[in-house]
Image 1 (tube, rainbow, N blue to C red):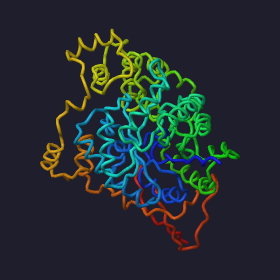
Image 2 (image 1 turned 180 degrees about the horizontal axis):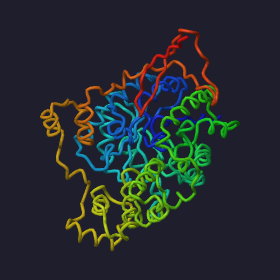
Image 3 (image 1 turned 180 degrees about the vertical axis):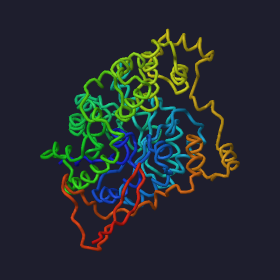
Image 4 (image 1 turned 90 degrees about the horizontal axis):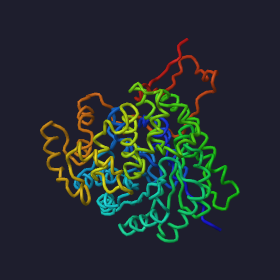
Amino acid sequence: MSKPVAFTNTVLRDGHQSLAATRMSTAQMLPAAPILDELGFHGLETWGGATIDSCLRFLNENPFDRLRALKKAAPKTPQLMLLRGQNIVQYTSFPDDVVEAFVRANAAAGQDVFRIFDALNDTRNLRTAIKTVLDCGKHARGEICYTTSPVHTIDAFVKMGIELKEMGCHSLGIKDMAGIIKPRIAYDLVKQLKAKVGLPITIHTHDTAGLGAASYMAAIDAGVDVIETSISPFANGTAQPDTVRMLALLEGHERCPSYDIDKLRELGEYFKGVYAELSKFTNPANERVDADTLAYQVPGGMLSNFRNQLKEQGMADQFDAVVAEIPVVRAALGYIPLVTPTSQIVGSQSMLNVKFGRWKNISQPAIDIALGKYGKTPGPIDPELMKLVLQRSNQKPVEGRPADGLEPRMPKLREELKAKGLPTDDEACVLHAMFPVEFAALHKKKDAPAPAAAAQPAKAVTPPPPAGKPAAAAGTGATTRLRLTVEGQAHEVTVEEVS
């Protein structure tokens, strides 16, 4: 009998990043963490991606404190983070010493598995992160960013998988950030990777185009080791397929795993309340199937922000025109995969093209892509665009690995922090390197909450009463402890009934 497929759960990272603009707070996660821990998942994705930015910029949290709090609340299940290689969790490349310090600090805080990818699939940009993860004794999962274009073939992806194995990766991930991998392709890609690389394989997709569950089924039939699912309402649409849904689809399949459905439904009830609390960051358009994504390939994690950004620019009515421009920009930039930061770069350039005319205004990040500052693009840059870039930038294209031209920064970062009276450890240095304004602001707030102590993990999640029905009242003089979340911040309150 074939080994059951394992599930990694993404509700505490990609689920809310894809459907609620990454606004779930640590206090909202902690009551669910122990139950997630008891379910026996292959892993919990809890960190990385946009969560570090969101913690600092919007939630008044130290992201490393979040990691420590979640490790304490869910100690048995390996936790994963999404790491953008040389970009760490930002939009630009960092020197090797900063990347090394980030990985060391993350490992020390309790991270178990590092999902390491490069937006261009340039493996040179993964070398430092992979080596440091290995040096720390942690699990390195090399990610292959899946996309479609004339230059992206199964053979090319397999070649990258072989390179990742040679670099020391323990396992591979097929990272389908836009939810565009079709079932037959998923089957063939998994089969080829298993045959020619031989490492354990995880497939990660989004259900944006409605293909996610079917592609997971095909990958399971091909022998994939792990699939990644979320928990409704932070599931489906631009997020990962729902865990209960996937278990139902697998019922009767020889590789169907066993996860406690009652506990999963209990979690679903809890997360309905969190979803309601984050309603101003959600959008029904992100919850429905959109087959147009097969053409424009915008990742699920970007869509929940992109509509808001267009609205802020007074271009809400031009959404369709902007996304139609995305394939044009992507092709001109060498068919780059659309994943942070390239998805944001292509999306912003598409917006500029629609607003001002094609290539009338070229953003600096798009110029940097064309000049090779992010790495080697999969295909050639459009000659006419390159001509404009060279004229406007007056720079020469980068030769070799971009990070080779970057000076070490850790000593300077420590000096800068010391001068400001801020901590100078590795955690502080790497946060300061990526988010200097936000990190300084966090330390200026004397009343900033400490997420690790924000709330004691609940032993059980109590679902809210059905709509229209009041909660059972306590007797006269009885007290009830409640946790209220206002603007992303949790407050413990005691409610006493008076006669």
